[in-house]
Length: 109
Image 1 (cartoon, one colour):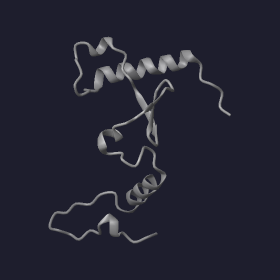
Image 2 (image 1 turned 90 degrees about the vertical axis):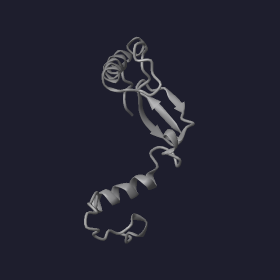
Image 3 (image 1 turned 180 degrees about the vertical axis):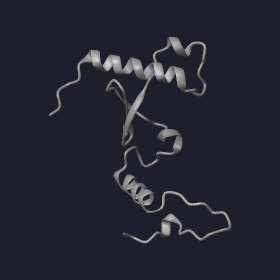
């Protein structure tokens, strides 16, 4: 079993992530003048219908990641399918219309 991370270490790591967020991420519908004074919520991981912030607090994420995570976060079957696809042919151009096989019809490994 892992030993608990000291609160001071969590706070220090959060402070660094929060500073990076303030400096480099433009959040929609955010008052940019007030943003540096408000402690940002830094989401670090997702599991099923929940997300967890960088301080270990868990939240019900009821928007499905803005409708692109309808099957939940960290879905093992989807992660494997994505990994298989990335290991097979991660990207290829379609200039001059070369044939590519649609992912839904890819041969089973």
